Image (cartoon, rainbow, N blue to C red; front, side, top):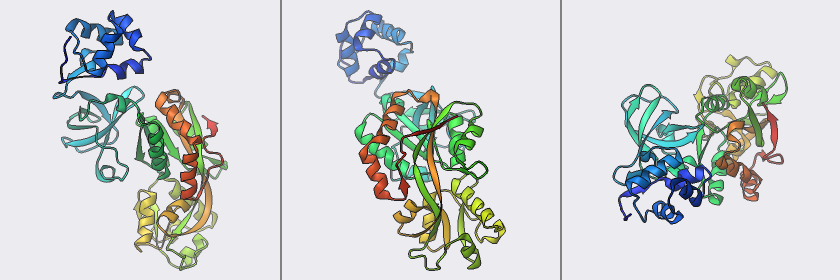
Length: 377
């Protein structure tokens, strides 16, 4: 064998994912452990015969193992959201449930402060839901070690970045979605974890009835992230002295609302029903934004008088807050994902003091039950 500076390989990533040591692979492929080490480090380029033996031993194609640096590999992935056909895309990638999922970096997702650099690009769609992706890096191990969380709590991003400090090989992709949308994303195999904060007024339960209904028989666990204060976000100092939604309606004040499926919208509707206020009496009920941050920004800019969100969001934007309800924010995880190493690493950090400190400083969270399994469905 000789060194080839243009040859790249994915041998170590595939070997470790299969739980094999270098010696295990060497024994199966009929080569020395030093050969495996040399190939993985890029010190040696294997012969055709050894290349075929390695591919057979690992149960994959030769092109899955080796490629030239100037010819980065391509993969076929399922698009997590529809995009215009024949549009050049920057994509983030992850392996979920045995298939590649591509997350288009468009709009807000393209310029988030915590954004993950693009893993690939594509100009070729395969049908309506798949795309051919040319990787921008040969580090497939990072893609296999990516955990995808769909949810609306900004604190998830904070938790993700803290986790990556302790586990540099782990990557967490946080995609914004309201509670119902996050559950559907989990069902479609587009995420490993769904975050939700929904209250069922009929049963007095948090999250469980909705998860049971949408998951439709699939086994999952619910792990709590914390209990947060939800209520009215108002200008700093609450200049109009709002205490209830009735006060807001009486003052002919305007609000901004969330989309159908969001926990904040559900809370608003439940509170209006509780106070016997018709939806049409609230000015701005149909003025929709799609995140907690957008609600706060609309109030901060003086576009509206109030909106439903959380105490932590109000504090972050320097706004006033009128508490209305406490909601439990849970992480829903399919049981089939629970034993995967990246998932275990991520969940293990819920008990870490640094995570607790970050949430406590943020404010508005009761984390006394953080990390506890609160239900199985």
